Length: 357
Image (tube, rainbow, N blue to C red; front, top):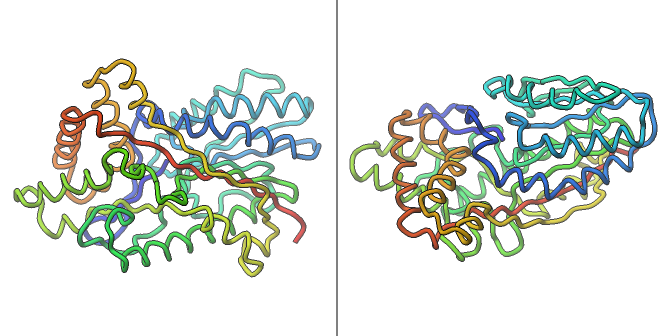
């Protein structure tokens, strides 16, 4: 999962959280929930002598080890003589040593696959045209390629209630998604498949951090802490407006839109929708707290997973010490009222296939 935040000068600051997999049990469950469709994709591939598989926005690769174990096992069972190449992709700032180590866990099998790391943004062309047999991406493509501008009254656009800002972010998100599918459709071979597992919002308006009011909106809580620190004079008004979580949770219709538009670049390249679904993954930290009532462990674990994807939005504009204070206060809030907290995942799964254009 890559993280992009608007820096104080309006440019984009990009970073990865070290030890991502250890802090993101929910992301692991989201990937596990898509493993059946990953195998469905493998079962649709035609026989050939070699295959290239890629994980776009893989972070350190730890959360997807189990999925790739299943995929490569199925590939070897179906095509025992075929050579497999598995590519893990993320930004140059990512922990790519850890990514390489997790990819290398696939090596002790026969025939031995080739594993590679691609250290580039997935907003660039990553693979040769027509070279990818199966592409996969999970909990990554909600991050935007550029800042649509700051928010004046919140830190996350979809919790802000700002109609003008929502319009700006929606336009950026849809331009990015169209561009993503254009790039990926060029890289896919005819008959190749792409499975995306994206954080989304459902028909009830729920998204990561907002479960329809059953518990507190996590984005509102982060903003309240940030506003509180601004009012205390620890953060300037300028920095307050600069700390924006630069992502967007698209709806199923928004995800499908480029595949229904016969004039979109991806559609004209031959990319077609095969299937789609929305999956709801309950917060693993809250489920554990319901069982053991260990409030300290719950507060620490939930804080850490929220910090893993949001910290850079604050640290990039105000520094590490201020960001650390945000999460100290967040952990205190969780511990004070654990029954009011949960981080539930709303995921959109989409299978796409490239056909002759």
